Length: 340
Image (cartoon, rainbow, N blue to C red; front, side, top):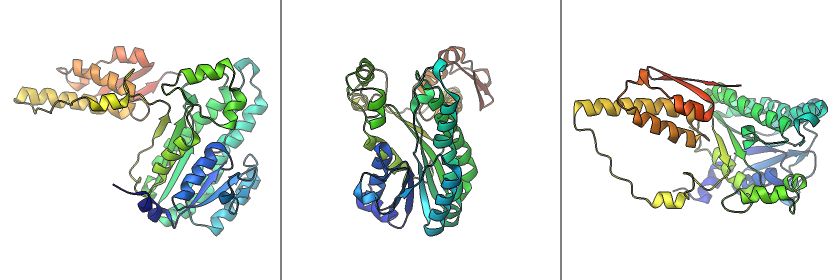
């Protein structure tokens, strides 16, 4: 088991850049990384609230492409940055009929384009160091939320870019991951959802803990992905939303249940069935990982029912209808198509 001091020793010679780190989630991330020994450079349009972050902070409007390039070039020249947290982002709530093209440009430039600019500027130092950690603050809003047409589009774009970057940069020891929090108790949230409003009460009532998540919850996940020891993580999108695993059952209760011991197959036919099931489950898992754990359990149940079938004949019609996805299993290889 690694202690906090172990984490500090692994990070004390690393520099981290946190965009939008002056307030709320960004500040919590910056303070957490600073606590763990990183030199943290906050890049934001306003000065950080936390005094410990002010000395190295850089003020710039990240929606301004030219200014952003100049600032990031100076940071890359003066520091060996191996951690980049693309956190900056704004929301422009509006129903579809009221969505403005001006807001589309503003959010795309700040939420998405800034991530591209910052990542491109700092990649050379990460490649030279032979490692790097890029973490993007996305959002579970990509699953759908009213009055978030543009915001959800920006977060979906970030997740898509992260998957591509992870594939391109893996050979250089650079990992790329996303954290996707649900609504958190930030100043932006309370501005859009006043504490005494019916909408705010409805959101809180839908959370099993009956309280809002905190920026520090996101900082915890980011800290994990930034660790030197988190070097084998495939592209992940961690959704921070509930404390429940199975529907209606707390994780504590689930972990307390006795797990029956595994009994190996006792005959050749049993081994064949076991292998068919494992191949089905493996293929299913490859397309349902990350935040889609519930779907994975559903499909695993379907595969178990069809255990006697060869993998090429596995049919997942019911699961397909349930999740609006088409999954085709063909001799151990899965291809996924998502309906638009």
